[in-house]
Length: 301
Figure 1: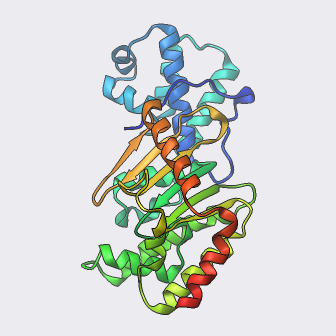
Figure 2: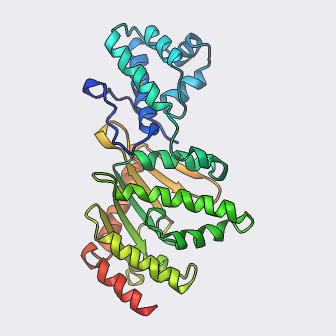
Figure 3: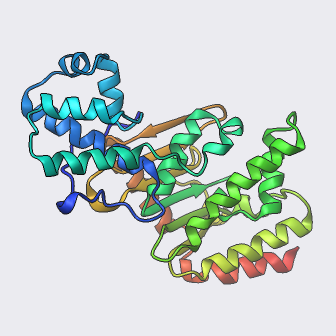
């Protein structure tokens, strides 16, 4: 469960977002700031909920960045918390507008589970993602044909139109790796994910060729965990850690399951997973050898 810790707004009222970050980080930073102001004023969540004609639960979700907010509600909360400075109020109300803008994925809500929408927002806002995959190539690195084959495996009963809409979402996500000064990705792929056929032989060849291309990008680091490494610290399954820019919000660990996902951000959890990811980086083949390893696999197809 995501728990956003208190954080002051950056100087000048900027929320520290990059151009690709979307509304998620605005909501999280606004919620963190409102929580800081509430606690400084000695106001309980119940009292804050009453002030905006709502509940303690809504204040909790607002402070966690899980929901958007109405300008009127934020204005009333700022008054309750003793924020009378016109400039400061204007900055926070401007952030409300940013936080309420829909993410690019909103038109695809019909094919996206709610628990995954939260991940898309974090992915869009992240400055760094570290991930380990054991069964498939990570979504951000998939080709269109490979993505289509993977999606079909888990959605055999849906229409072709729905399959294509899911593929569109995955291809749209890939743009993050093509933006200047955008997302940094460090991925460790289990050798099984590269050798397990998914789609046709042509699909697998194209996917490996795409990984060779991506490995040459300066902001993408790829490593392969070989069969010869035996057991390792991440034997339990795939892991993704997302780091948000600015250092004002906690890292988030994302653990996807078949019908839901777990989001962790407590230091005791994130520090453990960072240790696991660092161990994987040591045990996997060095990044400098990834391209040649992928080319050897290509020659086997």
